[in-house]
Image 1 (spheres, rainbow, N blue to C red):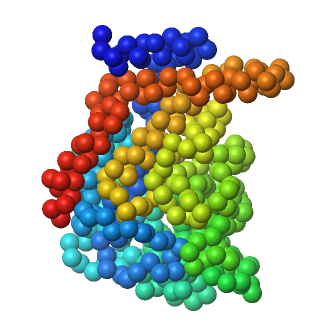
Image 2: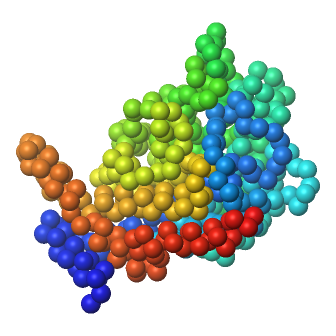
Image 3: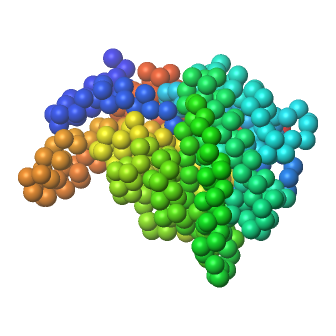
Amino acid sequence: MDKITSAYEYAVQRYADLGVDVVAAMKTLGSVPISMHCWQGDDVSGFEDQGTMDGSGLQVTGGYPGKARNADELRADMEKAFSLIPGKHRINLHAIYAETNGEKIDRDALEPRHFSKWIEWAKANGIGLDFNGTFFAHPKAVNGLSLSHPCDEIREFWVNHAIACRKIGSAMGEALNNPCVVNVWIPDGSKDLPADRLAPRLRLQDSLDKIFAAKMPGIIDVVECKLFGIGSESYVVGSHEFYMGYAIKNKKSLCLDSGHFHPTEGIADKISSVLMYIDEILLHVSRGVRWDSDHVVILSDELKALAEEIIRGGFLNRVHIGLDYFDASINRVAAWTIGMRNMQKALLIALLEPTKMLKEYEMNDNGAARLALMEECKSLPFSAVWDYFCQVNNVPIGTAWIEEVQQYEKDVLLKR
């Protein structure tokens, strides 16, 4: 018996003593697709040449060599990352990743055909696609405003862009027989104190009503809130309260981004409250440091709390999990792999928790036993289960994947 299997069998018994079925936990983990964000691979550049991201609330730092320069390179890098990550997952695209064959197509005129290669690639690889409108880095993103802009013409342009994105998402969902999560996030806000907080929100509400007027098959409509951004420190039109109210009233899904709230505020506690009133939510998992800085996701207490809340509440079938960060200071394939594997590790830890026992202690007002068991769980051998999960999914175990990324960098990335 090899060491991996031996350690795994020991772990199975340790968890069984607490009433946890390891085989069932691994089966569940293998069924959870995580949506990997394409924009980590090219620093949110896309394949347009519309201008900078000034006023967008985004800031990509670093200049590590080897970023993808076109869709073929981006897809190749994603395939490499997926070869290092157990399970079958999804890709999250932005509208700026359209392939127009050199033809100048503005965002309000984008069509499903401009993403046909992405759909074909996803079908060939057995993965799902998710989609986002790109409401920044464009001449009509005036002062960082889009769907709330006071100019009717500019606002109409962005409404048409969002409608086009829903049509693209619908085509993706139907072609892949797999619903496409179509997310709306806009950077609209104010750097300094606004005189009128209501009017922009009324304009945004009107824009959203127009965007969602037509029902479209194959998509899950989502709206995403934010507390502040670079260039919108004092006011953001699409706040948490605005979008939660809109989602409840209009039966839309809500996106909770772990970097879009106060730096000391976690989103794990929000999940059960939001899901009392909204059918499904989207999580954008990031790691803000001091601000919404989109660092690579690590296996932090915050990430584990997020996974625990999903599993403890039985919310897996109502929560869509996607990553959202962009670090240009390190190898980008490694950045994907680290984040994706850590999200899976957090879910595995949560799936291996003796939740039933913990809840029984809580119901019996035995807080000491509950706390003691929570602490003992931290030293249980989840890593042995993770290594076995990687082995049966034919991906590198432990640190072996690091060497593969380094070789890929030498053979591919540094030659760009």
